[in-house]
Image 1 (spheres, rainbow, N blue to C red):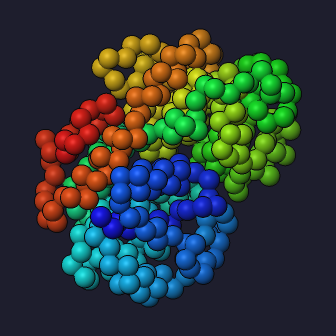
Image 2 (cartoon, rainbow, N blue to C red; image 1 turned 180 degrees about the vertical axis):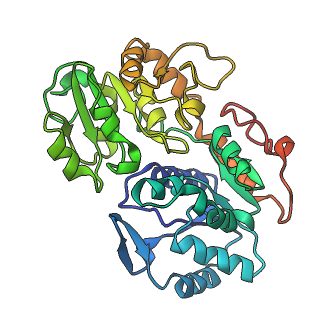
Amino acid sequence: MKICIVSDAWHPQVNGVVRTLDTLRHHLKARGHRVYMLTPKMFKTMPCPSYPEIRLSLNARARTKRILNRWQVDAVHIATEGPLGWAARRWCIKNGRSFTTAYHTAFPEYIEARYPVKADWLYPIFRRFHAKSSGVLVATPTVRALLRSKGFTNIVRWTRGVDAAQFNTEFNTGEADYQGGAGAAGTKPIQLYVGRVAVEKNIEAFLKTEVPGTKVVVGDGPALKKLQTDYPDVQFLGAKFGAELAAAYAGADVFVFPSKTDTFGLVMIEALACGTPVAAYPVQGPLDVVGADGTGPFDDWHTPIACLDDDLSTAIKGALECDRAACAAFASKYDWDIVTDQFLDALSIKPGTTIGDEESGAFSPGAEARTL
């Protein structure tokens, strides 16, 4: 099958959406599908106001039309609600082509965090974007419940997976100067954040905690310079990739996830795959991925691999008590074969099909992938 994935988020951006789509592309190709990525790489772009790392595609409507007319793909998946997403949506509707969409990012809440605009004012725009989709792919039951409360329909589960070939416990963290693989000495426990350095990630809540040890931030973004100035004792190591990123995860004693707006939080299972327990708030994302009691959403798993608490310092202290071997074993349950099966099944949903709770299936990552 010839599949087009449309995304306004793509390399060189470093985030969970890009990593998810890139890994999905490789798994689809391994199954014999031809995958076409429609991304800002193919367009002239301009920096997004207040977030220059994000590039906004120019002349998206006309060029997207020409590209999709030329590619003649069998299926279209629209991953983001940016200029390319809207252009591809318009092309699909005009040409009578079905398409799926995904709700990767809580953009209404992100925008509210940056500007004096209420998230509730924005949901009608995003609801309209997804309304014509034959299936809105959503990673967790918490996000599904939120979107249903906002009037979204045809929601389909699409869990996430971890790239076990990259993120695992095989790194010799004893060779690292700071125990995080990035060449900076520090006292234990090493407390690590990985992700975009931006206001909506709530990183400052982590940096304000008073747990003894060394705080490390891996990532880049518009809030980096301010946080570097305000927190000179924190190690800001910039963006890391590949083995360096995996070593940073593996060398930390605890992974801290302070965000209250993420729809999933892929970095949590990447850290767990490297044997590092998670500390987070009891909010969407962490509640679905590691569970309110830190034992995850799986019926057959009862060993704590994380700690959630409204007091992030308490969560960090609790996570430090978790068994690292259990963390790695737990992460293996996030299987990319299931992720790929769910994606392909969503593409086969017929236009106009109304998907209720009984068809959308349970959201447990371990559930049978082919039940929609």
